[in-house]
Image (tube, rainbow, N blue to C red; front, side, top):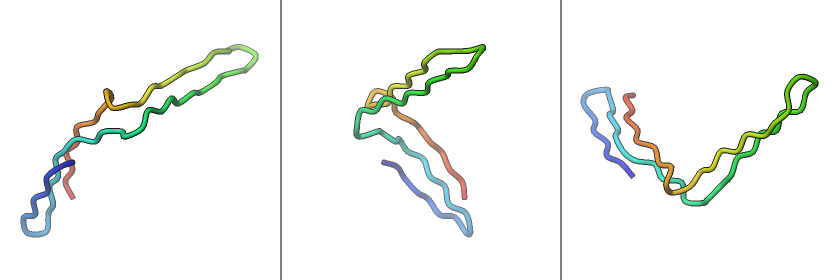
Length: 54
């Protein structure tokens, strides 16, 4: 969701991006020196506020 504004040849956008589905991103590291797991949880609680200029 957001708002756009055009001025001459420029476009400005501001808004909020909400993930619609719960998703867990998992990265596993298995090498001789390192081993472990990284889990990133994405969901509605993890929103992004954005500002774009183009």
